[in-house]
Image (tube, rainbow, N blue to C red):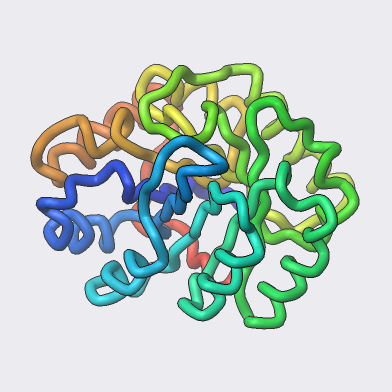
Length: 238
């Protein structure tokens, strides 16, 4: 994939301006990132599947759910019922479940993703890597926005890109955590397919979402030399 795609993390948006922000972003981004946390796997509670229905009232863009939950099977079933386009599960919790849950997601006509914590090596997912549609590399510890960017995690993005080319795998490579002006250049050198952008990279830059987007776009282009193109991929067809 030659173009960079952006997926805003909606847990960091201004919920007081929900409709305004979504309607603007519909014209500029490629998908929406929905963090689902249960307060057990990570010490925080955020969005739940009902939020997907609320976004769908004003958007046709694909949504990618990131499951930071202890009971992966329960939430996968919930999101299949919601017909969430991407369901991304933490590799650390998939021992004995991976093949069954990936098949279940695919049988429902949806995309299966796997997420790796900063400490988790990519070798963990080798038994089923050929089956997954997306691999998300956490560049921060999961659970909270605004954490320190862990630069060493970028090596996994580089390795996944090389492995995909060598083996002919079809997964997309996504990065999640502290994607902003300070880290854009280093992330770009690792070359992920999808950037998840949150408060530090987008929503916290200005009270007005249009201004925030223009600042983000300028920051990205200045730091990487690449042009930000609106709606650069159609995630339904990947």
